[in-house]
Image (cartoon, rainbow over all chains, first blue to last red; front, side, top):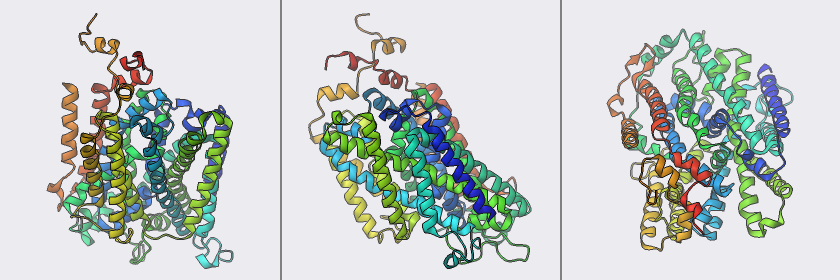
Length: 520
Length: 78
């Protein structure tokens, strides 16, 4: 019951924060969608980090470490540290500059202009929406599982069918209501504030849980020594993880470059310099969150209760390892805080994803096709809010269908976004990238993704590889090759468009760089 | 020159991720940290250091100017 009370108090705090953020709302569409480009370095770092860390970060990392050992850190965490930072530096800052200069709110607005193609937007919209929805489901299902495992026995009479635990349908309903409330009122500013608060909560919770659990197991050395004695293979990369799979996992974090919700967060930055802290601190934040979770997961393979039984008995449901370690080795207070921390990690992604779908629908469909002038700011915000309510309802209903294989579905969803990465990279850096190349690349990504997803049994085989590599490598390679090949043989964009997106450096900038400027 | 050197360092860091030399090593560092895990923890710190050098010595100054419309492309008649 203590756990439940702490989680409920945490959710109430978030609601208060959401309502408070409305006091700073300026009433304009730009403020609702982009916080009026007013977000500073700390909020940007926390909100982007919170957005990119999902249910998988706390729950899945310890679960994967429990099953396959420490290799999961290199496969997911250190790859993300490098690739995320590089994408923010090389892509995020450029997209912020382009978005700020031309007033873009969504990726599709940019791609339509850059590739001079309305059809490209029409093609991308359903694909992006279809890829975000499974990502939303991963969060919602993760939250439901955690709350259920932490509240077993709390309401034996009321919820007898779930052993007294809060039933999944109720958890999902409450989570959706809380997230919906603070983004409904505060827009992206509300999400950025909530994400900052939530990122602090889940980072602190992870570190505190790590310290207490290691102490209960007799200290850091004793905890690891037990694993070395019983499951030494968990302390190295086991034979089940091939070199090519480990290497090609590095493509998955490229997905951050095409996440529509991250694009929207990038555009909230006050200036380009705002990104500096994010680029530098993002890898350290990944280390702080992932390392304790991976170690707890590995320790769980050998951790014993005072009576000699295993803390995590064989046959325990997947991804409950962290909750079991915290529940059995620490106090109900910490169990409640951990529950709040996991909900924080999950909701800090859900909010931005819900909001980005509302933003895309309003700007890429409604105002684009019905006319910009027909809608004032008040109506645009209203449309976005109504669409967000609809998407939350649809996602909630889909989550009731209990889709299986949630985490593999998450990896598949990321693979789809990675397949679209060549599009954004070429749009920014290659003048020769053409409309036909872009459309071809998107179509090939969709076709390859669907084919490989089908081949994997629709995500049923979590260890599915193609040609010995993660399927993302094939999707990404085909997408990039198509974009390059078609662009080389089709007409380049107009000179007007190229000047718009690839301007020559100004005379001032050239002079400052020491370049001789004709006419000086 | 600095920019090129930093981009090469980034490429090197990318290649160093594939630490096959620790693949089957369960040696513990500091008595509790498997060497393969410690390597990737240090890798994250090295990434952060390289990012610090990138934002210090290879910062895209033109991005801010572009966002504010300070470029030749803007001055030309469309």
